[in-house]
Image (tube, rainbow, N blue to C red; front, side, top):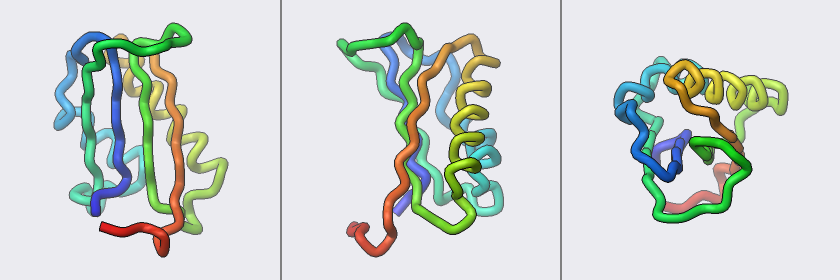
Length: 104
């Protein structure tokens, strides 16, 4: 199972390959030592409701003691900042799950 799972949704194609974002996101989400546990998906959508953002980012990650609310909030902010460096405004949300409830 790959976690964190980072899904980027946008109306137009994102001009940055998922593979290029992967390394930076692995650092932001503190999995740089094991980057193979992260999956990044860029999904172009036909239609969406929006609050004005270019990219909607949905992140699902395992709840761990070191992923405190403050740490997750900071990682969400850094994820938005990474996309801003590439010229995209982003709304980022993160959901942590209890590992014992996960099935593959």
